[in-house]
Length: 221
Image (cartoon, rainbow, N blue to C red; front, side, top):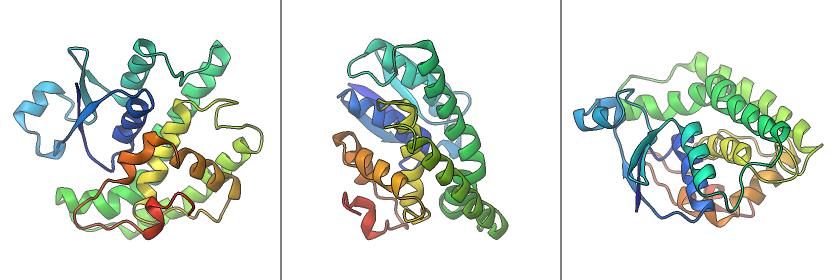
């Protein structure tokens, strides 16, 4: 069985978990307090980052690389399209969410409200929270622009780009930081992806000291 070293609300870990679940790959989840720089964990990944997965007798790091490895070794069901142009668009959007969205939104909301408390880094910075609350509106509007023109974020099929976006938004939804009424097309997209069996373990996550809102597990929210 695969073993994934993860943090429950990490969007990068959630993206890998969604990919594994969609491919029906059994995995043992091991919560890792990566910020403590445990020597055993540093041997697994000197960068001291999650996710780290043991799969096929290999230790793999970096969420984007892990997801592509899974896709190449378990191509069914496909989470990447056939053409180079379409695969480029998937990778572009993964980069958008894991870089731009992460920097402007996730780091300013989730990390300030949750990670600082868990890791003992002090109190939330209200300026960062305000910046994140402002930035997420722009990103939701951009997603709506895409979804007005496509069935899924990157095109006509569900891809790793959808999982990257859903991983970030689901973690933020756990702390009630997503205004689902801003763009109905984005809410409909999330309801569709949230209803997939692959999402079940993510919706079951519980973080001590932080209780999710009632709508978090509601498929008809």
